[in-house]
Image (cartoon, rainbow, N blue to C red; front, side):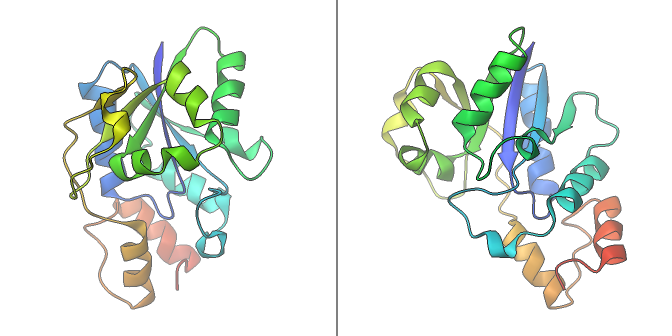
Length: 190
Protein backbone atom coordinates (compact mmCIF):
# COMPACT_ATOMS: atom_id res chain seq x y z
CA UNK A 1 0.00 0.00 0.00
CA UNK A 2 1.21 3.50 -0.81
CA UNK A 3 0.95 5.72 2.27
CA UNK A 4 1.44 9.49 2.31
CA UNK A 5 2.67 10.86 5.62
CA UNK A 6 1.35 14.35 6.32
CA UNK A 7 3.44 15.57 9.26
CA UNK A 8 2.42 18.57 11.30
CA UNK A 9 1.68 20.18 14.63
CA UNK A 10 -1.98 20.62 13.63
CA UNK A 11 -2.28 23.32 16.30
CA UNK A 12 -5.21 23.32 15.49
CA UNK A 13 -6.09 21.29 12.41
CA UNK A 14 -8.11 23.40 9.95
CA UNK A 15 -9.85 23.20 6.59
CA UNK A 16 -6.61 23.92 4.73
CA UNK A 17 -5.02 20.78 6.21
CA UNK A 18 -8.15 18.80 5.43
CA UNK A 19 -8.24 19.91 1.80
CA UNK A 20 -4.57 18.96 1.36
CA UNK A 21 -5.12 15.52 2.91
CA UNK A 22 -8.24 14.94 0.82
CA UNK A 23 -6.47 15.97 -2.37
CA UNK A 24 -3.51 13.69 -1.68
CA UNK A 25 -5.77 10.73 -0.85
CA UNK A 26 -7.98 11.16 -3.91
CA UNK A 27 -5.92 12.78 -6.67
CA UNK A 28 -2.45 11.21 -6.39
CA UNK A 29 -1.02 7.69 -6.48
CA UNK A 30 -1.50 7.32 -2.71
CA UNK A 31 -3.82 4.68 -1.29
CA UNK A 32 -4.04 6.36 2.12
CA UNK A 33 -2.88 9.45 3.97
CA UNK A 34 -1.69 9.23 7.56
CA UNK A 35 -1.93 12.47 9.53
CA UNK A 36 1.18 12.32 11.74
CA UNK A 37 0.74 14.60 14.73
CA UNK A 38 4.20 15.80 15.76
CA UNK A 39 4.74 16.40 19.47
CA UNK A 40 7.59 18.80 18.72
CA UNK A 41 9.00 20.05 15.44
CA UNK A 42 12.69 20.80 16.09
CA UNK A 43 12.46 23.84 13.78
CA UNK A 44 9.44 25.42 15.52
CA UNK A 45 8.76 27.16 18.82
CA UNK A 46 7.31 24.63 21.26
CA UNK A 47 5.86 27.28 23.59
CA UNK A 48 2.77 27.84 21.41
CA UNK A 49 1.84 24.15 21.28
CA UNK A 50 -1.12 22.88 23.23
CA UNK A 51 -1.20 19.35 24.64
CA UNK A 52 -0.37 16.75 21.99
CA UNK A 53 -3.34 14.58 22.95
CA UNK A 54 -5.72 17.51 22.38
CA UNK A 55 -4.20 18.04 18.93
CA UNK A 56 -4.57 14.32 18.20
CA UNK A 57 -8.20 14.37 19.29
CA UNK A 58 -8.96 17.37 17.05
CA UNK A 59 -7.47 15.49 14.08
CA UNK A 60 -9.61 12.45 14.89
CA UNK A 61 -12.71 14.66 15.08
CA UNK A 62 -11.85 16.32 11.76
CA UNK A 63 -11.41 13.06 9.81
CA UNK A 64 -13.71 10.71 11.71
CA UNK A 65 -15.60 9.46 8.65
CA UNK A 66 -12.91 9.22 5.97
CA UNK A 67 -11.52 5.69 5.49
CA UNK A 68 -8.62 6.93 3.33
CA UNK A 69 -7.28 9.25 6.02
CA UNK A 70 -5.90 7.86 9.29
CA UNK A 71 -4.57 9.69 12.34
CA UNK A 72 -1.18 8.51 13.62
CA UNK A 73 0.32 9.00 17.07
CA UNK A 74 3.55 7.26 16.04
CA UNK A 75 5.76 10.23 16.93
CA UNK A 76 4.50 10.11 20.53
CA UNK A 77 6.18 6.71 20.80
CA UNK A 78 9.56 7.93 19.49
CA UNK A 79 12.26 10.05 21.17
CA UNK A 80 11.79 13.83 21.20
CA UNK A 81 12.26 16.05 19.33
CA UNK A 82 10.66 14.43 16.30
CA UNK A 83 12.91 14.03 13.29
CA UNK A 84 11.22 12.98 10.06
CA UNK A 85 13.98 10.59 9.08
CA UNK A 86 13.69 8.71 12.40
CA UNK A 87 9.93 8.32 11.93
CA UNK A 88 10.38 7.20 8.31
CA UNK A 89 12.97 4.58 9.22
CA UNK A 90 10.82 3.31 12.10
CA UNK A 91 7.69 3.05 9.94
CA UNK A 92 9.57 1.44 7.04
CA UNK A 93 10.92 -1.24 9.39
CA UNK A 94 7.60 -1.78 11.18
CA UNK A 95 5.52 -1.86 7.97
CA UNK A 96 7.79 -3.24 5.21
CA UNK A 97 4.71 -4.01 3.09
CA UNK A 98 3.98 -0.27 2.73
CA UNK A 99 5.70 2.34 0.60
CA UNK A 100 5.89 5.66 2.44
CA UNK A 101 5.95 9.10 0.85
CA UNK A 102 6.11 12.52 2.51
CA UNK A 103 3.52 15.24 1.99
CA UNK A 104 4.93 18.73 2.53
CA UNK A 105 4.32 22.34 1.63
CA UNK A 106 6.56 24.12 -0.82
CA UNK A 107 7.81 26.27 2.08
CA UNK A 108 9.10 23.13 3.82
CA UNK A 109 10.95 22.10 0.67
CA UNK A 110 12.91 25.33 1.04
CA UNK A 111 14.07 24.29 4.53
CA UNK A 112 14.75 20.64 3.66
CA UNK A 113 18.53 21.14 3.86
CA UNK A 114 18.11 21.92 7.59
CA UNK A 115 16.44 18.55 8.23
CA UNK A 116 18.35 15.71 9.83
CA UNK A 117 19.69 13.37 7.08
CA UNK A 118 17.80 15.21 4.32
CA UNK A 119 19.95 13.46 1.71
CA UNK A 120 18.63 10.07 2.86
CA UNK A 121 15.05 11.37 2.75
CA UNK A 122 15.54 12.59 -0.82
CA UNK A 123 17.21 9.36 -1.87
CA UNK A 124 14.84 6.86 -0.27
CA UNK A 125 11.40 8.51 -0.18
CA UNK A 126 9.08 10.25 -2.60
CA UNK A 127 7.97 13.74 -1.65
CA UNK A 128 4.60 15.15 -2.72
CA UNK A 129 4.68 18.94 -2.50
CA UNK A 130 1.60 21.11 -2.22
CA UNK A 131 2.02 24.68 -3.52
CA UNK A 132 1.89 27.85 -1.48
CA UNK A 133 0.76 31.29 -2.66
CA UNK A 134 4.35 32.46 -3.05
CA UNK A 135 6.08 30.73 -5.92
CA UNK A 136 8.91 28.52 -4.76
CA UNK A 137 12.00 28.13 -6.87
CA UNK A 138 14.18 25.50 -5.36
CA UNK A 139 16.94 23.12 -6.42
CA UNK A 140 14.94 20.08 -5.27
CA UNK A 141 12.02 20.76 -7.64
CA UNK A 142 13.87 18.83 -10.35
CA UNK A 143 14.77 15.91 -8.08
CA UNK A 144 13.30 12.61 -9.37
CA UNK A 145 11.66 11.87 -5.98
CA UNK A 146 9.98 15.30 -5.71
CA UNK A 147 6.59 15.94 -7.33
CA UNK A 148 4.71 19.22 -7.13
CA UNK A 149 0.97 18.57 -7.00
CA UNK A 150 -1.96 20.69 -8.11
CA UNK A 151 -3.44 20.82 -4.63
CA UNK A 152 -5.70 23.88 -4.25
CA UNK A 153 -3.85 26.70 -2.52
CA UNK A 154 -5.30 27.45 0.89
CA UNK A 155 -3.67 30.30 2.77
CA UNK A 156 -5.14 29.49 6.17
CA UNK A 157 -2.68 29.12 9.01
CA UNK A 158 -3.01 27.67 12.48
CA UNK A 159 -1.31 30.83 13.79
CA UNK A 160 -4.07 32.97 12.24
CA UNK A 161 -6.73 30.75 13.83
CA UNK A 162 -5.05 30.76 17.26
CA UNK A 163 -4.83 34.56 17.17
CA UNK A 164 -8.45 34.87 16.04
CA UNK A 165 -9.60 32.68 18.96
CA UNK A 166 -7.47 34.67 21.39
CA UNK A 167 -9.03 37.89 20.08
CA UNK A 168 -12.57 36.43 20.24
CA UNK A 169 -13.11 36.49 16.46
CA UNK A 170 -15.50 34.18 14.62
CA UNK A 171 -13.63 31.11 13.31
CA UNK A 172 -16.55 28.90 12.29
CA UNK A 173 -15.66 28.65 8.57
CA UNK A 174 -12.00 27.78 9.15
CA UNK A 175 -12.50 24.59 11.17
CA UNK A 176 -14.93 21.68 11.15
CA UNK A 177 -17.73 22.24 13.68
CA UNK A 178 -16.56 19.27 15.76
CA UNK A 179 -13.10 20.85 16.17
CA UNK A 180 -14.56 24.26 17.03
CA UNK A 181 -16.79 22.63 19.67
CA UNK A 182 -13.78 20.79 21.13
CA UNK A 183 -11.74 24.02 21.31
CA UNK A 184 -14.62 25.87 22.97
CA UNK A 185 -15.36 23.07 25.44
CA UNK A 186 -11.72 22.99 26.61
CA UNK A 187 -11.17 26.78 26.32
CA UNK A 188 -8.10 26.21 24.13
CA UNK A 189 -6.02 29.05 22.63
CA UNK A 190 -7.59 31.66 24.92
